[in-house]
Image (cartoon, rainbow, N blue to C red; front, side, top):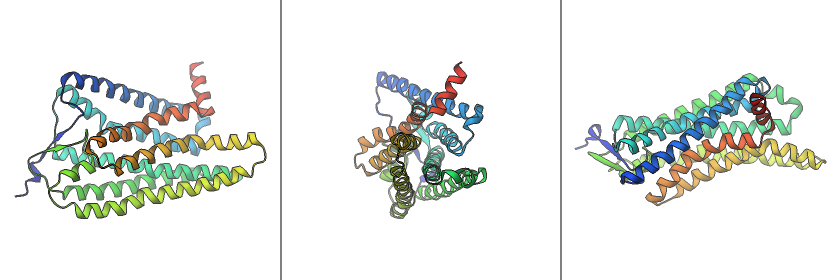
Length: 299
């Protein structure tokens, strides 16, 4: 008998030892605070400094906001489990966590593609940049990313509802990750696996190809600049975005190509925390406008 409605999930959190749980709790708390403080700093700077009210920083503001919400769907629950020792999560809570994780992650994927388009227009059409990347276009791109992520996350979560579980189910990860749920489902994984193949093309191949095409055009335009200083200045305006894209897609591919359940836990932690933690650091250290805004506040 299918008793999915009575299912509860036992969340694996690296360790069952009390001392190790305290260490993990402290480590995760530090990471969470670093991510929150870094991304809140970026959003505050962009809000307060009118010179940062440009398309590039509009997308960066949304990216930082997404990063805060993205890690907040998984890390607080992990810290709660480590603190209380209560590893059980209800079926509804698990599906809600899965949906939010997919929604924020997918939005970030589409947003990074929009940011690549912004850099393409800035480098290849500098004189028409303000006309092409108008406020209306930026808002449209942001809402398009949110809408596509909403649709995709809703479809996958509906497929996840069709998975069959019995009783108390062990999830070999620190949150309700889709791959872990599929591994413990008794039936109904074929349709989801088929959809995920198509979905990986939509979310993985197409955006990455668009980003790659944008940077091929950008590099071609940079090579036409005669001054070495001019070439470096133009490239540096794109370097932060390139770094985040490489880390995001690199960690995602590593996670979803892995066949080891034990490795998935570590890789999932890297995927969840690495980009949100690096994002404010990369844009702060390698961006003169952000650095100038920080100095202005300090002074």
